Image 1 (spheres, one colour):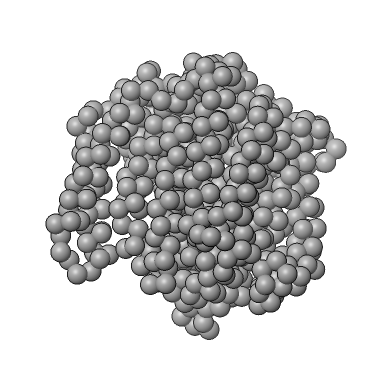
Image 2 (cartoon, one colour):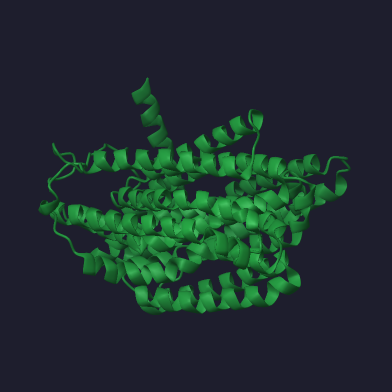
Amino acid sequence: MAVDGAPGTGFRAKSLPPVSPTLEPSVVSAAKGSGIMFASKLVAEAARFAAGILLARFLGAQQLGLYSLAVTVAAIASGLALLGMRAALVRYVSLFAGRRDEAGLWGTIQIGIGLPTVLSLLAGAGLMLLAEPLATQAFHEPALAPLLRIGGILIPILALGEVLAAATRGFKKMQYTAIAKMISRSLIRLILIAALALTIGLTVATALTALIAATAAATIMLLLFLNELFPLARPLASARREPRSMLRFGLPVYASSLLATFGPSLRAVLLGALSTIASVGIFAVATQINSVGRLFHGSVVSASAPLVSELHDQGDWVQMKQLYQTVTKWSFTVSLPLFLVVVLFPAAILSVFGKEFVAGVAALTVLAWANLVRTGTGICGVIIDMTGNTSLRLANSLIASVLIIALNILLIPQWGLLGAAVASLVVAIAVNTLRLGEVFFLFRMLPYNLGFLKPVTAGLMALIVAWAADRLLTIPQELVQAAIASVLLFTVYIAMLLLLRLSDEDRALLTYISRRAALRLSRRS
């Protein structure tokens, strides 16, 4: 394959403003990719949050529980059909693109997209056939059967979108996933849900139809983006296919990622089977609120995966350690104030969705702690995956799977929502502690340095100020009072970070971002 920017290739060279020599290229790439993903996820999460409020307000906890179960079952089925090709595409597209190996790229794309597409079509047909027994025997809710049949249509669309997004990420084009899968799908879904609510009325069936239409539009966009990066109109025989290598890498990742991918989904299914359908709806709202705290962390994970793969391939351990520590600090710094807001004002936040959802206050708080554990341990899971240690991840997943299933079965019948949340926290602590130890054993690297004292100190000061403001204020509207205290919390947190001074890497990163923004503005002018 030709070099970057050469005619006829999908790689286009772009001039970047110079950056500080103290900021290593891998960290700059992670910052750029994480920033794109974070901004996109912020827009997407705002749209999903608004759609969630509409669904909760118009459907109520019971009907929202039915909607969540139908979507959850479809998501699990589509995820199972991926067979590890999502991770394999990110790794092998990145490697073959770096080596300019066009035949290897074409073969990777064929296997990575073709196999999940076939399996997802079979899974969708299977769900349609088994909808009735699943609804009546597993969930004891006959009204769920027609909704599961609609979910069967969603399965292949979801699966195809996932592998197309993974292929574009392998080319380090994070913006394509951001535009299609995050922004466009979320906004289209919100617009359709709002239109349905204001016209013919919002039901579970029409809400599912809106989700299918939005997902299909995003999948088509991703296909067009991939074709722009790597034209797909070429002979099939010109590819060099390595299915065994892809499966050998992908299957352990696939097996080990099942818990990470389907953890919330598994809890929703167990709640539906062992508790009430309404508890599924409340749990879905609590999970959605906590997903805001994972925005930046998820962006860091997506952006760092191909970088870790390349650094490991090059044997550059110095940059890998720097990447590990820097992005972990970024993830923790951004997530900490969001965590504090959720812990301080859970009832006020849940009341936005409706009074019946306030019953999930305790579960929301525990889930927030679980999120802080995940974001505070950085990209240890990515390092294990992208360095080829998939057997370790498989072992971690097996341990976690046993824990999550056993704890949910044990705790949900007694504690309901709170039991599912406690199980999440225990598993998050166990799995992430294990991952930290494994990365240290393999590479003698820890994600922490003295720089972590700055966000911790800023967080403590912000927490004290927000707590005091909440106690002193006597505004009748609880939500307004919580909003004022939250603004104070963020203000104090940011001010403290600035007073404590930024590190060399942080200052170089901000310089890079500001110069990049200035360059874009000058180009537009």
